Amino acid sequence: MQPNEVKALLESRIDGCDFHIQGEGCNFQVIAVGEAFDGLSPVKRQQLVYQALSDEIASGALHAISIKTFTPAQWQDAPENAR
Image (cartoon, rainbow, N blue to C red; front, side, top):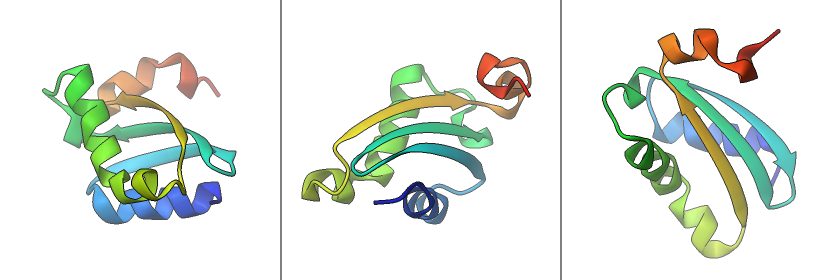
C-alpha cells in the first residue's frame, strides 16, 4: 500500500479528521487530528484508528502501524506540527 491509499481509507471511515501518513509497503506512521478524539482516552483513540483499518490489518496489507492522535487544540502545540 501507499501512504495516499491509507489516507483515503481513513478519510472514508473516520469523519472530520485530518491524516498525515508516512511509510511504505505495509509499515506506516499515522498522525490523526480531529474533534473525534476529544474526550477519548489515548487507548480509545488508538482503537478508533485501528478499527478503521481492521480489514487491511487482518489481510496483511498493513502490518506495522504507529499511531499518534491529537485534537485540533492539541495539534497546535504538538512537536510533530512544528513547521
